[in-house]
Length: 203
Image (cartoon, rainbow, N blue to C red):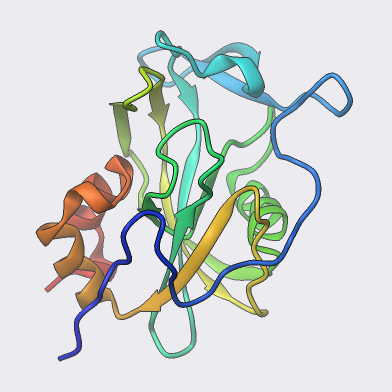
């Protein structure tokens, strides 16, 4: 059985993306991206600007995580861009995002796959529909999300945006599970929490 070697922050890895323009975060020069705020029961209570919602006191809001698989059964891992405000340079699942107000989660996943990874996905299935987590970055910024987890099949080559992903790697699910268990500090807190609950990574 081969093992998954996770490059350290600042090191080269299997594949690095080309340049990309734009950002998924709203700004004064572009459209504002809204996230859906939730109460403790998961009921929508309003919206907030994604660009400003993540602070040391981030309110509970709706998100999703997606684990992308290819035709060989390998899982796509991505390394967060070094310019990210939170968890820069950390390895994580294929991609995450936030459904907009009234947006179907499947539609949001298709949209985000195109925006962040420059690819197409289908066969989207729920994996951990009730996943919720709260995590604090070293900067003090908090993630506080109800974040259903999905799997999907990739249908085109990956061409990540440089402001989102600085590297990516295809790995066998069992090697991902081994690496996450052995070196959780090298991965995002949400993938560390998700992997043990997903059939994809079951031993």
